[in-house]
Length: 359
Image 1 (cartoon, rainbow, N blue to C red):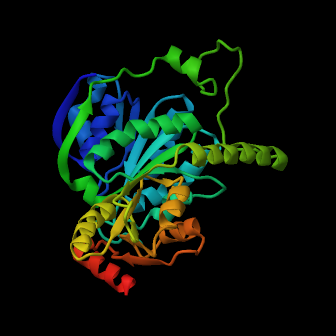
Image 2 (image 1 turned 45 degrees about the horizontal axis):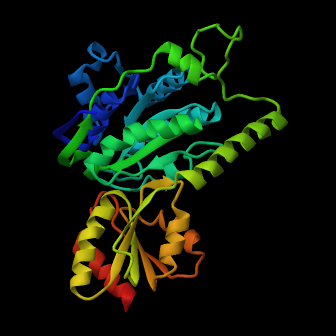
């Protein structure tokens, strides 16, 4: 397959990947710091080339419900937003999960709570990985640490969404969304035909009547025992996802005595902090969760279990640390270092937090 090298922002990479991977439709609403996703799609006008629909909805509420409708038809559809807008999508995401539909949602996180700031943050970890809406559901959550991963995770996100018939989130932040890096992009892939959808998505309400049955897509079930059976099926999918699709990267862990656990922008900053720490004789490594849900619990338990102490580094007040502590089952001391409200930590600050922990 032909590859092409481009220089682009993380947000633009999301949009470019959507066009090239055969996405059928994007429905979104502008909000800083992710507005370039919609802007790039509007500038590229893929509806003239690939047939991809691009629509600025009147609100985040409208956009997520448009995604719901497109997903119900078996289409590869997506949206993107930033923290306050993502909050507005929670009811729709719960409906999509309850209806067992595949969809992709990108959250380029900014500082909060409330309207907060437009500066980068990682304070939506709870909202995304724990299923921010109502009911017992999860969002499969991918955490890119580069512009290349912003691009790559769009197709991966769709693959996981259709594998588990569940919404998938790409949880980024304003740093990765706005930074410019080189990206290898793929050749254009064709969109799915109606015949392909009819064959591979038998649950989809496509309008085809080859089965002789009307397909009703809904998240509503009034009988409690039937709703429990639906939940049993959904939870079984989540257990399978935890076994098969937890992803992570381990960096300089073989000889490490201490461990950073960090994702996204914080992980990139930790890589410089590792360099500084090792120059001073402190052997530290990094586990970077790539899926925040399913969290790479087994990997953190195995690698973290060999360490003296663990530092959870986050651009928030301490959210992922709960999953880190659960992974090591309180057998290894786990501490937190974070800046929040939109403040980006420096490698030197992380090094100082590590030194305090080592003492």
